Image (cartoon, rainbow, N blue to C red; front, side, top):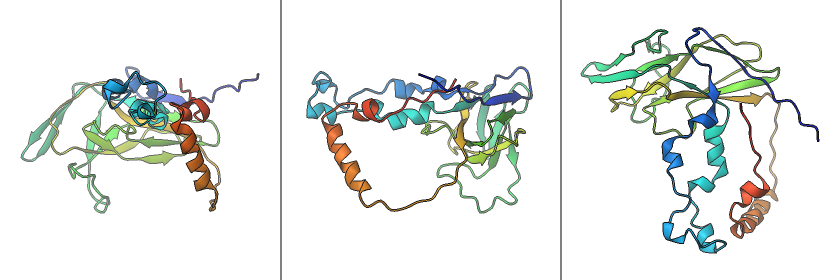
Amino acid sequence: MFKPKPLLIEFGVNDYRLSPPKPAKGYIPEWYKKSPKYKDYSNEQKVGSKLRENNKGIKYCMPFLDTLTHGYMAELWCDVQIYRTPNGPEIHWEIDPTVLAAREPQGMEHLPIPAGHLGTHFVWKNPYSIKTPPGYSILITHPLNRFDLPFTTLSGISDADNFFPPGNLPFYLQEDFEGIIPAGTPIFQIIPIKREDWTSSLNKELYELGQKRIWKSLAHTGFYKDNHWNKKNFE
């Protein structure tokens, strides 16, 4: 059977010491790896039981895993030390190129600040140029479902098939954080998306069809993964 050639996303970097973004599947967090498959350990061996179906943990949710492994991650290339002071955070790092900077607030006064974050508008000094195949854009966003990180990166969509210079990526720092954000921490996720025109409509039968599939899934552990999920591959 003919297998289409994988699409190519290209990364350029402004400093030879820095690694390009890497597949997101290499950044699955430890808290996910340590999460149990089942909510109740005492029922782990009850294969095929309805109790076990209702006992599934987060590792049985393939849509959640897809968020962690989709696309590519850009990571910090050095440790960043954050000190809390009466005048705001004091930030240090040891090597060039510049990792981050504070941005002037003018023009950003009405941008909502995530709860629990400082009002200072920071930017990651993105060192990467990114090029996609014709017709593809990229979603650049905070690493999906990574609420354990001490910052929140804002999201943007770039038509990277014809515009690919580096740029500043805004983020907010959690107000109670003090310590080191270590080198290797993912700071933003890059997800290629195809540009297409869409329209929408109401399908009155769709909800009922979805309910029928829910009932089928109750009798089959891993029903979505085995029958409807498609493996995504990013290298």
